[in-house]
Image (tube, rainbow, N blue to C red; front, side, top):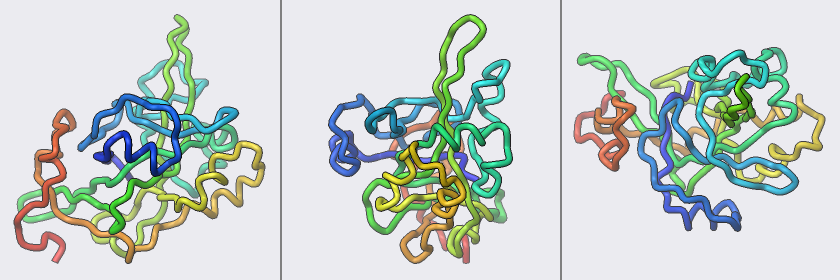
Length: 226
C-alpha cells in the first residue's frame, strides 16, 4: 500500500518538470498523510493542477467517512470495484510525489524507511479522483493512489507499492478519450527496482501531524534491512 508520501520540491521546480503554466501556492511537504490535501494533475479540457483530499469519496457515498478507507486502489481490480470503476473510466489523475514511506519490522517494533528514485526529480503516481457533494451542497474533491505488486526492492518491506508512471505515459493516462481500459491497466506495473533506493528515516514521520525536513532525514543506524 501507500500510506504516506512526500513532495519536497519547490513550486518552481514542479512547474518546470510537469510543464505547468499556472501557479498553485504549495509549500514543500515532508509527510503527506490521508485526509490531508495535496496537489494532483488532471485533464479537464486541458491539464490542470488542483489541491484535493487524500482518500477517495465516491460520488455515490452517503457521507465523507468512507474516504480514509479508500486511500489506495489495487490496479488489478479497478474494473471490478464499484468504488473505483467509474473514476478509472472518467477521472484519472497524476499524484505528484518525490518519495514515499513504508515501515519495516525490527527488534524494537516498526521502523520507517523512505523510498525514492535515484533520479532526484519529482515523479507521478497513478491516481483516480472524484467530486462528491453532500446533501447540504458541500463539495469535496478527493483522490486515491493506485498500487501494484512490489518490485524486488520494495518487497523487502512490503508486498505492494504505488504505481509510478514514467513520464512517457503521463499523456496516455490523462487522456479521457481513451476507452481501452485494459490497455491502461498494463501501465500499472512495478517500477524498475534498479532505478530506486530506500533508506531508514527519523521516527518523527510516525506522527502524521509532523511535517518537517526532520521526517526525511537519513537515520544513522546499521542496515535495518540486512
